[in-house]
Structures are given as C-alpha cells and as structure tokens.
Length: 517
Ligand SMILES: C[S@@+](CC[C@H](N)C(=O)[O-])C[C@H]1O[C@@H](n2cnc3c(N)ncnc32)[C@H](O)[C@@H]1O
Image (cartoon, rainbow, N blue to C red; front, top):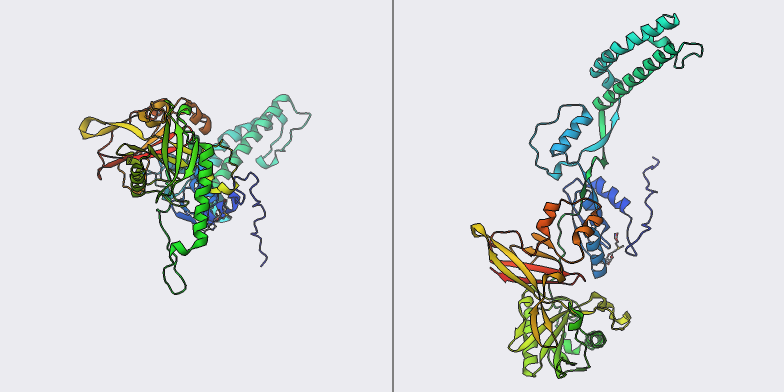
C-alpha cells in the first residue's frame, strides 16, 4: 500500500531559542495521536522544553528532564512566559452550551466539574450518508417552514410574468425584459430558496455521524490561559565515590587528574571573584577586594581583603561550594568555625545553590556568614571573559518578615524587605520592600519542594502594566490588588509547623527562608 501519511510540513524551528530546538508541530501531532487531555507525557531529554510547552497547550500533564542547566533554564522561562488559547472544556457549562449548539440538541443538564479528562469540545466533520438524510425528520420541518414563504412569492411571480412555473421551472437568472417588480420577486424567491438549502444542509451535517477533529477544539476568545503551576527540581547534593575494577574504593587523594580539575575550578572562581567583587542589592554596598590570596584551610580556600568606610582593612574568609551540587548547612557551619578560629572578620561563601537549612544560618559568634550566589555563567568559566562586569557573585539578603495573627487562628505574613549586609559598617540591616519584585509563600513547607501557594508582586517597575502587556489582556483590578501587596492573605497555620518564603528581586536573584510557626 502506498503510504500517504508522510509529514512533509514539519520543518525545523526557524525562530530557535535553543540550537537543537524541535519544531512544535511534530510533537503536537505525536501527542494528539497518543494521548488524551489529562494524560501524562514524559520527555527525558527536553532541551528547550518544546514537549512541555505543547503539553501545557493541549491540557496534558508533563514531566521533562535534561542534564543541561542551560536547557532547563530555557524550558522554565519558555513555559512561564507562554500564553495559550482557552479551549472549551466538555465538562463545563460553556462546553455543554457549545455542544448543544453544534448538535442542535438541548444543552445537557449533567453536573459539571471542569475536569479536563473529559476533553474539549471539538470541531468535527460529518460523514453524510443517504441513510442519515432519510432518517433526518428535521429536514421536513425546515422544508415546511420555508414553503410558507416561498409559495406566495412563486404565485406572485407567475402572476406578474403570466406563467405557471413550478418551483423547478424558475430560472436562476431573471430575464432582461421583466418588470422591476418581477425581478424583485424573483430575487426574493431565490434568496429564500438558498437559505432553505443552507439550513437543510446544516441539519444534515448536524445529525449525521461524524468524526472529531481532536486538533481543533473550540476556543473561548475572551479568555487567555497561562501555564499551570509546575516545579523545577534538581538532584539533592550527592557525592560520587569511584570504584576500581575489583570494586575497591579509589582513594580520592590518588585521583590526581580529578583533583586537578577541582583545583582548576576553584582557581577560576577565585580569579573571577577578585575582579568582579561581590554584588549586593545596592551599588554602594558592593564589596571590592584589594587582595585575594590562597589560604591553606580545610574549607576556607582564600583570604580576601577590603577596606571599610573607616579606612580600616577587613579580612574575609572565602569558601567556595562544589562545582555541581548544593552547599548544606553543616558545610557552612564548619567553614564559619574555621573563619572564626583564624580571626577573620566575615565569611563569604560562594556557591551555585544552598540548601534550605543554610538560609537560617547567618552568623557564628561575631562572624557574619554571607551567602553569595554564583551566576550559572561561571560553569563556563574557562570561556568566560574575566571583565569584572557581570553580576557573578551576588548576595541577596535574608527576607525580613513579621508573622501576624489573623482571625480564626489563621496567620498572615508581612514582608518588610530583605536584610542586607553593609560592608562599610559590618552591620546587617533590613532594606525596604521596594527592592522586591515578587514574593511567594509555601504555607505548608515540606522541607523538600517549594510550592508556590501564595504569590505577590511588588516593585517600582509597575508590574501591573508589564503583566498586562505580556498577557495582552485586561486584568481584573480587584484581583490584582490582592496580589500587589506586602501583606499576605490570611492562611491556616502549617500542619507540619513550617512555612517558607521566597523573595525575588528585579535582577532575578532569589532567596528562600524557612520559618517555624
Ligand atoms: C535534541 S535536544 C532536545 C531538543 C528538544 N526537543 C527541544 O525542542 O528543544 C537533546 C537534549 O538532550 C539532553 N541530554 C543529553 N543526554 C542526556 C541525558 N543522559 N539525560 C538527560 N538529558 C540528556 C541534551 O542536554 C539536550 O538538551
């Protein structure tokens, strides 16, 4: 049999965000051929997230995986910024209404629950057979209805032109020599005649057997849809031990090559740290080093010096986290202890990620612990131009919040700002809420994954306007007002005793802190 189903319209994506980005169309087709709304789609090599993007659009759940941070960042941004059409759900009042309209039946009175598993209301193509026409009694009703109007017109026309034409004798075009009245009657008769045919055809189509077009659901053009909530997870910090051919553990100290790699990483990071300094929310609080020299500690790997506002020299101990993985609280505590023993003024930790518990660790004795987040660009440090321009090391202070008691035993969170270290005075002070772009609460934090259960948007950059522009839609002002607030809506006390607050600034830096309630 000749195969006619080849897809020759699935070109490569032209507007690529990722070098190997797949075009959406083939993924969309595969998804529609093999799944129903509500099903789960897995793409273990997601790249820029095309599968997830398409799955969101078609109401499928999804899990995507990739080994590359670049692709995960792209996928995350792509899904967060996506804007989708709103498809009518079969299991909804609007959907029932639409279905009734298409099938010319009374709307279903079944209770609706907006369950996507019942699918959308789809466009369909009829399979018209003689049987379906013969069995369609609605055509007779339509015929009778039009006959009441067509017959008087035909009689009047016959009178005017002195004929005794039957319906099938009436020509499509009027004759030149006819009177204006005859021409008008002729036109009216044909207009009605065509309407009758159209209505009969529509009835035949509606009552015939049909096939759903699963890629053509009906849209509600008044609604805009964005992606549903999703989480981005990464592996827990882990250490890999290497075993030899006979399963014996290989002593890491003897693994010269790997050790050298690690040295390279630390070396490159220190080089960048020396030129870039450590950025904070305010320019005036930037820490610029006058020197940075290696330090023979266990965890502290360098000594960095800077001048405070009284012109006295301060010594910072530098701790660099792993190239891949997360810094945990015990690592930080040990590093701080080392720094205190060696009489440093402050510990500056630099890492790609910190675990949730380390956010609560701010000070050991008199030594403040500053947690700088390293920019992911530093993963490519070999190829990175060391210009000192990028925000490579950013300290984003701790969220400063008050817990307020609300009615009925509920609580509310008020965000005052973030605590910022002032290198000139050595103090940690709370900054106002202006520096915060948005903040989220997980009102029942499980110590593993942060679920955004409340989201609020603050900030000087008129987030309302940006959101309106992004969504190209009007946003209900009242609903928006509840999101544009430094005080949360009231919520129940967490069952497991902890809430987590995540704060994001205008540069996209984020920090999370866990609070016991
Ligand atoms: C061809 S791309 C996928 C493109 C994707 N369909 C899109 O539209 O952007 C393949 C992806 O697989 C990822 N990858 C390679 N080996 C992997 C592995 N072992 N586990 C997970 N992801 C992997 C790569 O990082 C790359 O992003």
